[in-house]
Length: 452
Length: 187
Image (tube, rainbow over all chains, first blue to last red; front, side, top):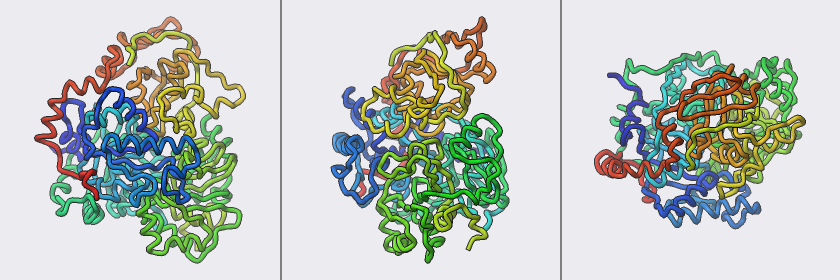
């Protein structure tokens, strides 16, 4: 019987009914301390430290601090130090603040080559769906489940349903992976994928770079999906090849065999015309409240949308391109990889950030930062007036000093525009790196396609 | 985990859709390394709104897609610490739902119309064993995964249950474990 990629990976990892073996467990400082503490109290060990990897990202200041001791905020410092102590005690490899390999957990996994096709990958973080871009089954878990994986290397899990979204046609000029996923969430809604593992397919997906595929899978959770997946192909293999943890000879045939068989059935399928997508900008307080940059703020259809417009201080009918910005944030596990930074740098090269805008670029990892600096991207950004920072989650969620002030309006390449996400009372608009870069220059949103 | 069978009492109402975990427990409170003490920060920003009224009753009734967003178990911890024992909604976000069941906070899915009626009723009795919610003189059945229900009813420790299958995990690792990256071997 023909099988989906999800079916194949699931079956290969089923230890028993609804007990799934986990190939890689990524750990960060926010969702792990209570799990390690419970292990300690129960006298349990980490079953497979060699399948576990830790890094510090959420609390890390992006000011170039090189040790946890330099973190001013007491609670943040304790949380990072706790992770460091737990990793040492339980024998888990860790790249903490100051390491040349530190970075956002969903950036460093692929970057080191520990994210590979066919694997099961979990982390106490909803954006673990990112790793599905490699043809892996990857999803976020809570702290009790983190403890369960640490202790048993397995997860109790009912098999989710499957969905395939096919994109017909190619993305137009200036339209990126971020616009594709925002446009998709706008169509299916923020609960459209609940209970489902979503496979993204079609020519528009196949022609995306690995960075673009990671952006798409990353935001699967914003559509409610359990995990996002993309079939591994030559683009995948080229990306993995030569990375530190990659096999010396790639098992390309095995990886290719993971692809969904012709005729395999999904619980649901839908098709989206990729060629019809425009650059997207969110206007509300969920990622599903999104529209074309050429459109206007819509009339609220219910109480939730009305509330969102009030929070965002926007009037229905205002053209999106007239929305003026106070801040621009380029970074996060959605859009902080070298390809994202290159795209943004191309837009700002030789230009200046509007005087009314405070703009920052936060590379996703220490390695991305190093690579960008070797290419001179830091100089491009600095010359344009951007603040060039060190790696971390930064203003995606304000657990570190990078926080927007109440009432400030932010164009952000991150994944969530929830109330207060980037700072209490801050108003977030999600966009692609190119769109964020152009908005920084003009001080308001512009349609990147016609902007020069 | 304490066994859960009956949750009965007054109903608190939060009639909003897509309530995300950033509202349930904002990010600045995720820095604690303990599991306890999150209740006082529940809905920290919303609680400052005029007219906010969310008493610490046993049951919370709310809108669809409750708990969307991050995987933070701090959200169920905060709801539980605040005093809720069960949450009734038309739908839940996946990770949040799982997290609730791991700590014995009972998530109950009912059709939206029934949730609205339950909100109006103000008092309810949830019987997990019978899979039934009683309010305003009605009994409304609900579905829940049998294994999840069993664990909640018996108050089982998930890790303990899995470790009963330790031989199976050993066998999987010996016979079927996929070759793959070895994190401890990274130079």
